[in-house]
Image 1 (cartoon, one colour):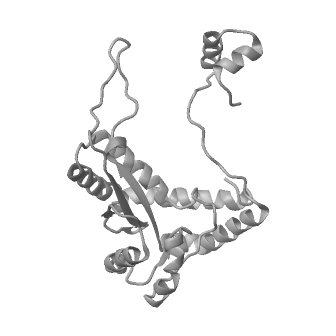
Image 2 (tube, rainbow, N blue to C red):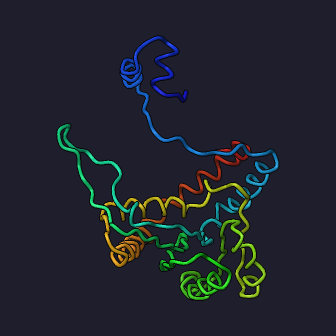
Image 3 (cartoon, helix red, strand yellow):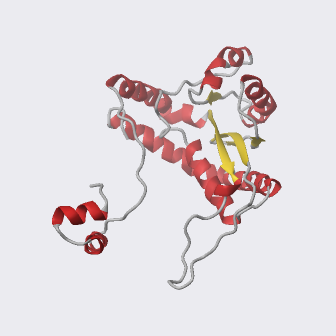
Length: 244
């Protein structure tokens, strides 16, 4: 069920406050919606094929793949949006007068992660190639027996595909419309939460917080539960014929 208390009150001929009280008493909450997209049959089939391939030999490919992605962090967003406070005094959070945004690239694996790459400009082909070249040694050191590499279907990623093959990247091609599968998305969420707790107010403080919290979140010990969860979700995707 999804509606507003006002529309529900009108529908059942009760006041807005009464509708709100009834919903709370029945364990409903009022929160943000989640954007979703109805998958076509072919897209579901592609997801199942991808997951079956990753799950072969007890998920050996999952454990040997670097999952990479980009995200952005703004100073204006780097603080807690909600806190516990008394009814008479609301918690105040200082926000910066001048906003800046930093973009991040990182890759995680079962054996560890790359260092975090931070940049301000738009991601273009040359920058992406430089990022990969700069971090390829880190990945090689973690997997001297070879590894796979996965990124999403962002245009810059796909246009660099030929160059990446020349650089001996062994690619895993994810299905389209599948942001719910790669574990790195969960790391980004945890990183945003960790940075928000520190409420940085300058660009230097934001960058320092991002780097330090990335290192903490991407220790081998912290990463392994994400990969167990990934294994379970891919099994679920197969069992549910492409859906989660």
